[in-house]
Length: 427
Ligand code: NDP
Ligand code: HSE
Image (cartoon, rainbow, N blue to C red; front, side, top):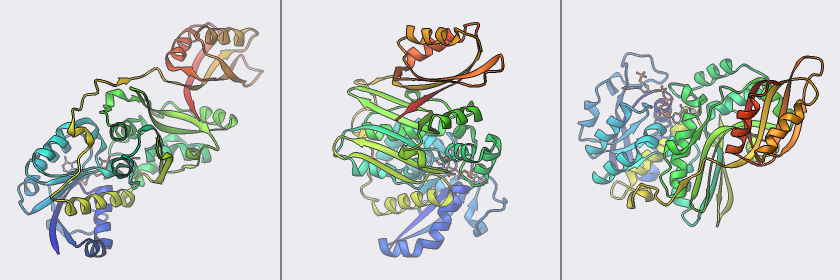
């Protein structure tokens, strides 16, 4: 049986989850696969911190050199998170001929070329299944199971924390801050949860997924991003009245040589398959020209679901030491000369505003929408007895830029008190 020594960088949610799986299921996994894997060192910030799992104290270190310079360690699994020092440690590991497994979507999305080129140069592997959608094996599916397809669309819920928050706000009418604190306690949120609630985490993940799916480098600067912090209970309640459920969706579409990639709060019809994805679950819908529609569903965050993806990468890293797989982009160049990134996509819109309740207001606003080619599919006005009333417009499909121009003009009308929120609607 071949022996492999592995080191962990980080021992928080993902690190302890991975460790627990190796302790619980390790002997069976390794017997099946014909290898033996031992965790030799674990890098942490504070070696004295109390840990939720028991580890021998001499396993823990705060000195990266004890890992990078140890010739016995063949695989380094990184779950520190963030850009630095994660990038530096991964590069040092690769340059010291160690294969790297990472759950870090930020470092992958920002530094993919540098890291993968270092892996190739050093003849080692770079594995990142856990970086997107926790326990769902989506990277493997897109890379290894859908090569026969021209993938034209990805649409999904790829952040567990925001899905947990939106589920609880919508179903239990709970406050944003309370539910976020709960998601942090449950180990779903990023070390800095701004990354979750402002859509950065989903942006990194969409950059990774669409790069693999479209065989084109989709950089984070090519992904439009909007988080959920401006969403109010009123938006959710009005959406419900219209038969919608609110989700933070990640959407990437390819039409010819044009790619659109966006992350934003989105209303979907309550009977849409993604509307039933609750709590920290994720689901990703993929459209390929050969396979048709495909949907993957599972736990998108948390210690054990993510550990499941990490353990699979560690086992594969050990099994394929002599032949690692790289992304298709590393065979060519990473530029996307032929591709245009499109930010004028077309979708329906839900627009909530507060206006003065007097005759002619509706006609005035509808007139401005009409001027920019935006057609209205429905209007709801609430409360007749006050001076200021909320009004909701739902549009037919319209161009993003037309909506922006219309809203810019509408907000300057003296009958308009406030533009509350503009939320895209997908079907
Ligand atoms: P945690 O904050 O729970 O854990 C981070 C760990 O890294 C801690 O053990 C910390 O040490 C250690 N660490 C942080 N900075 C340093 C440093 N400079 N030097 C040495 N050690 C350091 O994070 P998570 O486990 O939740 O997330 C880790 C990564 O996994 C992130 O990239 C995240 O995006 C990704 N991920 C997380 C998922 C989840 O559900 N939580 C799911 C999928 C991916 P100490 O304990 O001493 O403070
Ligand atoms: N914070 C991330 C989420 C962890 O909530 O989805 C999984 O990548």
